[in-house]
Every structure is written in structure tokens, then in C-alpha cells.
Length: 106
Length: 154
Image (cartoon, rainbow over all chains, first blue to last red; front, side, top):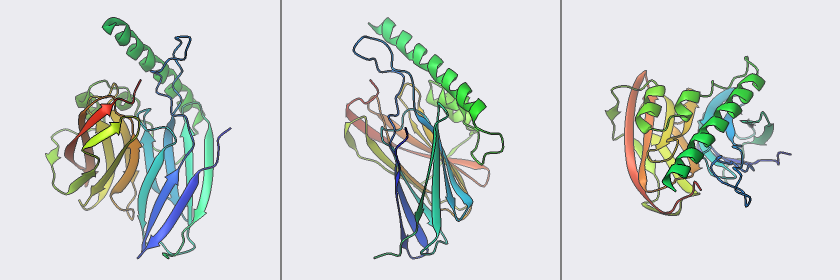
């Protein structure tokens, strides 16, 4: 069900500028459908970013994060070709992991 | 009208609690992810949420920069970036003080990662956006007002 993330990691000096775009409805649990029933909360709770297998960034989110979330971070000591892996977990237990390679700055 | 809105908020909170409980069971104990701060994310007052982070006696700091629009036309997508120049930044939390649940996100930052996080949040109404930074066991804070034209929580 979960669609792939788009991850871009670009090297700036020795810092990898990582931008992640996830696909997720991020329902707040406060909206109603046309019948007046509340749409249940459904949102990403946790995003873990690893750099060459080491956890560097661990995000905990509430339903206040926008739909199709964007996340930006900067990893120091990165080199071109390094692996950046991102895993999110939502409140229903759905998970998705995607990986990207750090690209040299153009 | 106001009364029914209250009920909706309470109901929303209840559902969130159920969801969190389900997720807690599903995430293996050995996972690298930090425990989801349930009391904090379910706090309805910014002060309670800040307390849940363990932050008491925060210092206002000029070394925290919040990049956010002065006026957000669409409350559903408000880009917020927080940069902490405080050495040994361990975590950054973002709160929209007047949201139904003010705490939006906590970022745990490992040594070797810059004290920077960028994210897009929903804001129900004009409010201060507060960043709480934990560095070397101490807490620092900064805030910036964001005017919201159309709320993004409904």
C-alpha cells in the first residue's frame, strides 16, 4: 500500500543534504467524511534515517505533520556513494524503507 | 457548536491513543527508534507538552534559528526549518502552540548530524511556533509567530 519515498542526498562539502518526500495521508482524526463520521487518525509516527547503517536521525511525529510529509536533514562526514536509508512507521504499524546513495555536488 | 467541537477533539484524542497503543505493540522492542512520546503528543497545552520532553527551566537562545513564513496562507502546509548552532544538539522539538495537540515533532539527532531539521506542519490558527532544543542535558528554546490565513486542521 505504501508508495515509495523520494530521497535525494547531495553532498555539500562533507555534509550530505538529505531531502525526503514520503507519501502518506497523515489524517488528523479531526476531519469528517461527507457522512459526518470522523476519519480515523492515520499518520507516520516514526522516521529513522541511517547513514551507512548507523542511525543518525530519529524523528517522532504527531498528526500535525502535513500530508505527504517532507523531511530535510544534514549528515556530517558523508562521502559520495554513501548509503542513506530511511524507514517510516505509521500508527497502524505500516512500514516502508527506501534507500538512496549520496551524490556528489554538481 | 462549540460544545460539539470539544467532543470532536476529545474523540480524536481517544482514537490517537488507540492507534499509539497498537503501534507500540507492533514496533519490536529492539528497534532503533526512540519510544514515541505518547503523553507529549497527546498534550493539549503547549506547557504540558514541553514538560513531557523533560524540559524545565528552558533558556531563550539566539543560537536557534526558526525558518518559517511570517504569513502562511495555507495552514495545511507550513514549512518550518529549525537550525541549532548550540554544540552537542541532541534533539529538536517543534510545537505549534495553539494547535489542538501542540507538539508536532521531536527529532533525535545523533552526534555527527547537524542540528538541523526541516519539515512541513499543519497549523490550525495563527500561533507561535516554538523550537525546544536539548543540548548537553540542558534545554534551550526560541519561538516565532506564524500568521495563518486558512487553518489546516479541519
